[in-house]
Image (cartoon, rainbow, N blue to C red):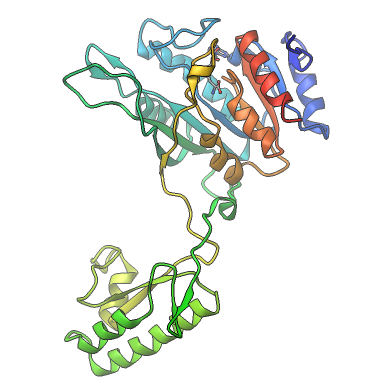
Length: 360
Ligand SMILES: C[S@@+](CC[C@H](N)C(=O)[O-])C[C@H]1O[C@@H](n2cnc3c(N)ncnc32)[C@H](O)[C@@H]1O
């Protein structure tokens, strides 16, 4: 028998229950059964640190309890989503983040472009600031028997904030392990194989650098290699005038690098000693839906890890208003954050509750 202990079924006491939960020490999730809009309206303003959600697709799947996604037109669907996002903006703290995963739909053979229609409405009409548009590459798509277009293997994830500065963002939590420099034949070689030999030869043979510029370039190169050996930087690249392609715009009007290249003849790009930050294309396999009888939930736990780690403070509260089987909440609990999951379906919430209870 699945426990229902932590699932609220009435909306009348949402406000009080949330206040008590947010003040307490217990990080086990709070599940609230009901319609997202009705419940969000009862939550106090500026109390949530982080929201990540995957609303139902429009016109694609039916969930047990109907709900959003079954509207006659995509315009009505977007209106319904926007009402929910307005509430999310109200209850999100100024330092908070909202990560939205949306899939697209075909209508009369044309892609509707739902993710971007929604994202632009959010920035233009609700004043959200869109910080990233992430391509979730699902690597393998579902069955596709069409003969006149490509397979669809990606979805969009948008990262929105309310303020342009000082929202919570801990980039060091999501850096990849930096590569390590090593010593080869007595010389230091960076993680990507930079030993300085090739750059030295390019400087010596350069017809574009003056003698003084060559001396300065050699000296600066030696200093960079010393920093690598001391572990002050993980790696670097050197851009030498008329040797490497400039990494930024060649126009001095838009790039200080272009000016540096003209005035000094070279510049360096140093890699961060703590490792590089993730890019905006994520290759993550969808959740294995074969094992789930009740619910189609192609939203894997790995999708939520970077968002939670980077944008939810350790003592923050996570929200998913379309919680379903609770992936966002499960990740929040794994990462020791408090969390609130809302869903129209009691059955899905029970699955979510059971998933999270296994962690305790
Ligand atoms: C794409 S699923 C979410 C899947 C989820 N990420 C997971 O890990 O299982 C969308 C969910 O939204 C719920 N839903 C639809 N309309 C709703 C509404 N008006 N209020 C609350 N939940 C709703 C559905 O029951 C479904 O569980």
